[in-house]
Image (cartoon, rainbow, N blue to C red; front, side, top):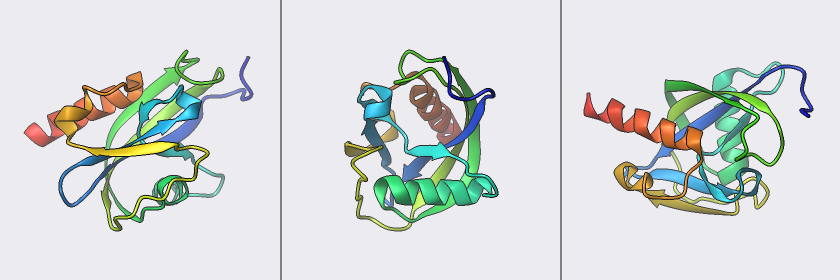
Length: 140
């Protein structure tokens, strides 16, 4: 079934560049659909540290961590490559660097896209909800 006995807290980051576009990656762990970069919070690591580390590891960008926009749950999703129970802590981030360098493990390709156009892409469910929440946030 699952490797873990408990839900796993993970972070997701909606990285926004200086042109207002968001970064999405294709991840083999999520059946090669577009997702936001993110990952596990390590023991002893703050959430903000985890956001910065995961983004740097997966896409090579330095980010300024902003507002936590959303908390989502994914329980044994068919979209993930194995049965896991995740609690996503989703943050808005501003890219402080420009050159995306993928790790070729978590991210196979990437796209910078206008948030309103992102919903036309093949996204997993939690990424779609995150982008919708971001668009609602922008409308306020």
